[in-house]
Structure formats: structure tokens, C-alpha cells
Image 1: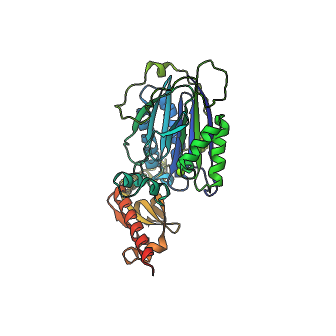
Image 2 (image 1 turned 45 degrees about the vertical axis):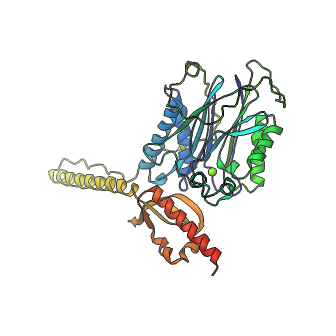
Image 3 (image 1 turned 90 degrees about the horizontal axis):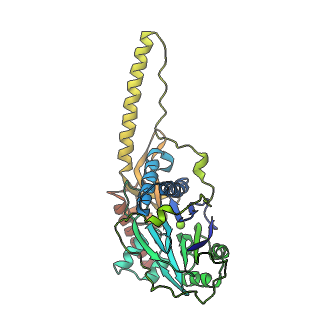
Length: 412
Ligand code: MG
């Protein structure tokens, strides 16, 4: 099977940076939507994609490559204070002849467009999706829910991650779409379907996605990758409404399966390094480490100086140990507080030590901090409401949202 690819990523109309990234390195394709602070999101999404690309050159299943990406993002966030608490979504596709393997974490999505119909292949790992599943809200309400971007699963926030894995059989004429929530949050699935139906050229189709998402507000970064499957040796054609061959009965749901080894087909498939990613921000950056740099011990022959140096060395070692201990402690703490006048989830403790913040924003919610503070229960929001873990913090945010909505409904 031949694959024609169109890919685009755009900053959108509102954001200051593009924290999305994509990978096009046939037979491996992926999108990632980073989050966490000023630099964190960009680093997380690029690092995740670089890691699966590198990991893919060794053996292992797609799920294992994604787990490898999780480890590398998590480890970087532990080492670099500037990106602590970062994470990313990741939706990856590996083309093995007529079978496309999928691995997925977060709220980016994979769709199959076949014979005029759009099938969603992935499940969002979000709080609202969980609420839909539990019957608390409808699918339609979820589409416009203010908290639809709160993730219940992301890559790089914990040492391990649960990866959804599955596959779909494709036939000539099928189109696979990988995209971030900056597209699905702006365009309805019906509109996405129409664009895929009307726009045969994959480059033009991704450009239209970006254009229309921006026209609809472009409140988030927008990224889309389209894979068009064609018969081998077939000249570039414009797919029409008539498909060349009967598509197989749609086997399009993301099936769970136990991390099978990549087939011989995938092992031998040539994957020329045709990475068409946005320039990696990490390329020009060396990792920064938290804690102070250790001063070199003075090299003087005088014994007194040596003794002083040993003393200083021990003091530095104790300080380093203390910093490492503090770091481990801080990283296991969660709280809900205020960032940029919005209610936000933080990792760390709500304090500073000699000018260093001991926390970083993991998630900014759209909840207005003033509205929350107006309620007696959250008057001290600025001091931080501590939680046992991320889930706990999300539950607090959900409670605040409910309380604020109720207060608004009841009026002053
Ligand atoms: Mg996004």
C-alpha cells in the first residue's frame, strides 16, 4: 500500500507558542499536544516524538516506543526545573502494509474516513469523557464543556503510562486523520468529514483544516496529519466517490491487544528519515539541571585549604542531598491554586525557597479565579488547596466548577 501524506501545524489565533508537534517519518506518523508552563509543552511534545522516532529504529512494539517516550519526558521533567510537570498527548500510527497500528494517550484523536463516513478510532482520556461514560453529561454537552481539555491521562507526568493500543485494516481510498484538540475543538466532526470528502489532496485538506479552525476562533494550536492509502504503483490520483475496491467491513474501533511484536513487514520496511516536523526547540538547547552547580574544589597544596575544601565539599554534598530530597518530596505534591487569574492545577507545594518557586502549573482551567474566591469555601484559593494526587486535584477543580456554576445560577 502506498501512502500520500499531508501535514500541518499552526499556532492558532490566541496562543503565544505552538506546543503541538507532529512526526512524518514513513511508516511512522504521530501528533502530540504538549502542556505545562511556558516551555514545558513545547519540550514535551517534541521530546516525545523524537523519542518514538529513535526508539522505532530499535525493535519493539509501537506501545513500547510510546512507553519509552513517556519515560524520557518524565525523566527530563524531573531534571529540568523549567519544565517540571510538563506532559503531552500522543497519538501514533504505524503503517504495516494493510494494517495500521495505533497507540494513543490523551485527547488528540485518530479518525478513519472511509466511503464518505468518518469513524473515530480513539477514546479521549479526559474528565468530560469520563463524565459522559458515567452518564453525567451528554456527548453534545461534552463537545462544548468548559473543562473538556482536562486530561485524565497524559504522557510524561508519571514514571509509567497506560497506552491504548489497537489496529485498523485499511484499503485503497481510505484516509486516516491524526489531529490535536485544536482542530476537533473548533470544527464539528461533520465539518471535518465534509472537508475530507471535498478535498482530495491531503496537503490542501490539512491547510483547509488549519484555515477553518482559525476562522472559527483558533483558540488552541492546530495540528493535522492525513494519510491517504493508495494501491501500490498507482499513479497519483484524485480519489473520487467511487472506491477502487470494496472496503473491508469496517473494523474500526480501537481494539485492546497485548503489545504484540511488530510483524516482519514492519521490521523490514524502509523508513527513510523523512521527518517533516516543525523545527525542534530542543535542538539548540542543552538540558538544564535543577539545583545549584557544584563549585569545583580548590586545588591548593596547603593542608588547611584542603581541609577547608573537604569541609566545603561535604557541605555541598549535604546540600545536594537535601535538594534532591526536597525535589522528590515537592514532585509528589499537588494543589489547586491560581495562575493568570484562572484556577489551575499545580505540581509541588505552594511556596518559594530563596526566590525559587517550588511548584509549576500542570493545567490551567478556564475557571475565573475571582468567581471562585467570591465563594467562602475558596477564599484562600491563592494559598493553594492541597490534594493527595493529580486525581484529587482534578476532583477539587471539578467541585469548584460546580460551585461556581451554582453560585452564578443563583445570582448575587
Ligand atoms: Mg491542544
